[in-house]
Length: 367
Image 1: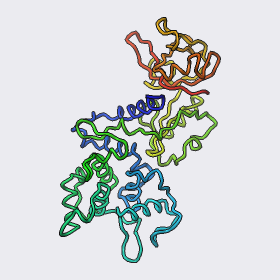
Image 2: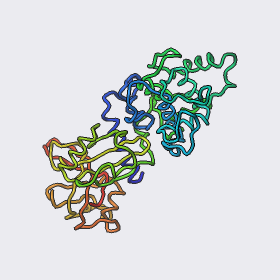
Image 3: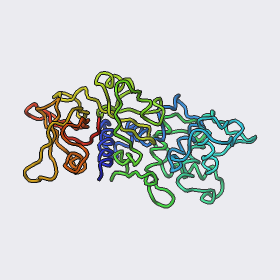
Image 4: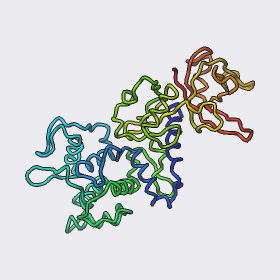
């Protein structure tokens, strides 16, 4: 596993660790776990306000739950429906959902993007994602689709009649159920997105961090967090030092400590930030960013090629253990850092029985 793969595992482990309920069959009814999975996957983001889901928003969720999410932007070059201008934030998603046959418009060439989505419409769209077509339903298409929707348990924890409208929480449950449902070809739907199921058939949050993870990036006190990521912060989810947090809290830590180090995932619109506020503090966070000048690099007697620890000038009594081969290489005689360089170390901190804190370096960035 390379440096970025290792960091992705750490970040999603931190996200999963913030969930109280373990990932077991019993967790299938845990709304907080389901919501976090859907947010991390980028299907439903914080920018979708309100209690009920509109048809435009649902089209966006559908696209975000497929491989089209990497190519469908918010603004379309043309208008497909009379009531969906090209400038609409859902124009591209509506176009994709219509062209792929997941959703359809109404007589008169309108889509009604602001109308609330019904359970029946949602069921048809999800079955389409699973590979079901008109040929799979004999007799009444409507009744046949609703029967299949119930047979596959796509409506678990939703409990809506066909013509009832859906809330955002209903959509969280629907898409979580979709991820763990087998497609018509027998493969779990989540595998299309690179995710995996646990042995209990739940979606494993640890597999959601993907190749779109970017970072580390230093954001200094006089710099705006908005300029560091390619998406709107109003739509983002935030973690600070491994714990679920807010934008305001991250800005406060940036101003207090002089900087934060961030990673971000463009699909899920998630930002992981690490601060320096608790560095060297025995009661501090389990994950911190430590800044300083490298004053010493130590090697173990059994391995004179790979360094084992580094010392920084601000914390001369603390040894920072280099966690893996990629981090070790960066501080070796062949790597990019040497004594005198100013760096930021992203560390996992653990308090020992003796009251002292140990630091394990999991990533690094030049300051």
